[in-house]
Image (tube, rainbow, N blue to C red):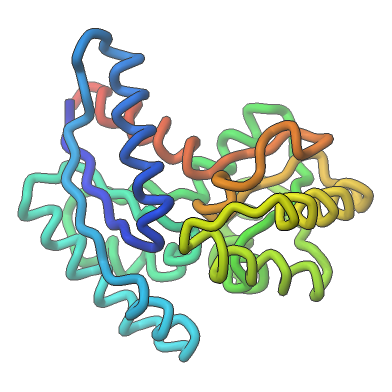
Length: 231
């Protein structure tokens, strides 16, 4: 098995889910006591969040690029950025190393296409929902992407940073997300992309009347498949 390098900590709540999924999926594929070959570089999310808010993306990208270099030096054969939002600096990370980066938006778009769907609603941070680095990548993958209205985007973003990133899962927030999902479905969405790695801690398949696409799980599945593939 190739070694998977994880750029994590954004937040560590979802990075822990990556670790659990990667190991469980490896055991399901290989059986017995097998677990994934992993190296993890966990950054301080408080530093990253300050840079995000200030729009200092290049500086944030250099933090992740340094992490990627360390992971490559530690023996990683492929890399994952364990957050949707920080794929804004994916090109900067890719340029810093010689091992491949498995882009989360690409794995998500492939899963939506495989399900025979095209028009999807996107939930995530305000950065992910409103900027083109992620939506544009999904569109390039053949998807028609819808996002919630401005007040609903603000609510989704707030729940991520003020609750999910610090380990709070509230039924009131689940109900609010159900309402936002309902609005997207009423607007024609055939599926919902859970485009923030923490959202899977809150939203379950039964919370949506249409299929949901959990990006953390999809990313982990693609990573294990790549790690177990031939040279």
